[in-house]
Length: 576
Image (cartoon, rainbow, N blue to C red):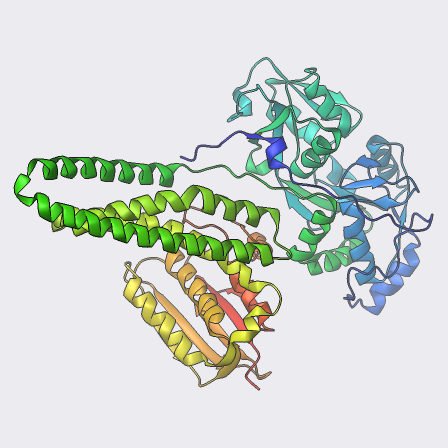
């Protein structure tokens, strides 16, 4: 079972930036925002319908930073405003914003039919009585926020004599009252008052959106608060647009624009308002296993050192061996120093490195390299001494290689991201035979696969222009995913052929469990891992595939197979 670390919010929240101030005094969204030139094609009937509706009135929450608020000039601002600007531009429509006193008044105006749309809210049975809901504009978790001294919350339903404070009239209030009758619920008018109430000890905790918590605590300087646990999965926010019950066609039109917003566009919009470093629950299982191996290796090292000191007849040979081992360790230390210098130079040349990557690489440099060097050196000493002969020795060596290989793979994936900046990869571009590349990857997979998969290659003669190493990584990551998720002994196929448009299509197909439709828009995001996933990984493989393909002017997508499993298709332009 994973052991979850309690995280202080002051360490978990990155810098946030306010949106650039919108010019003018009108509360309507601009007709042609600079964020996108994509236009959604609507039928003549849909256009006539929109013209007949008149103003598309919207009542946002005026006090829900950084999602939605009105700035000092009366302009609608925040993450929601940027998303609605994108929708308005793609549908060629205008939203007219009504300014309510608070969220309670916005709900009342919607119930009375005075506005057509509530722009950013969760779907609940009560709200379904007068609203129909679009697909989700944004999905994000809710977290428990407490004071620093409060213990970690593993099961809120088991708490007793505890109070929780929430904003009045939110869907969260409805659900907490229903699901946690053991908690005493307090309500306050605004988000800011929620966090101040916990800070002043007027309530024990609150349950709020991670983005809102990060923004508010950073802005208000409430660094005595911390994240004390994540809410159950069914408490994840699916923030949608709510449209009056009598206008389902308007909801369907809005869904067309929402479906066109990519995960990358959502990420860019959020990062304009608040950057968050999410400290995920830590699974100490692999670390404990490595610690056990280290302890065993250390014990064996002391045992054999003791034996060698007592065998006077081999003292001279032992001294020579020790000198050779010292020389080898000195060489390894020099290589490690050169590697560290190259890594530091690469980090200094990065122009757009994000906070998560910086922290990850620093962790590798300061926390993993020295232990890995010690482990490797110890194993080398034992192997040179002939102490790893026999079945037990071989088993110890294999466990060591597996543990070190897993961490080394994580380091390699992180460092590969450095090649994506600028035009560095183009210096290595050359004509590549796709069939030969697929055969090379398949041959490596057959040699390293331990689960008896049947790996087949079928490829038409085709040549593309690209970076050999990057495209090798791309195909290797897709095949590695197929090997991890497919049942033992099942077939995995690699195909390459020319499409009708002249592009070269490379497909990697498996018989695994497939990918749920709800997860497909997010699978190419950095560090994305499907909830409940049992297969080991770091959420970088498909992110690297997507970036490599886009660097080569191509596309990648995934589709379900009718007979089970899925197919990833990479489309690349042919060599000119």
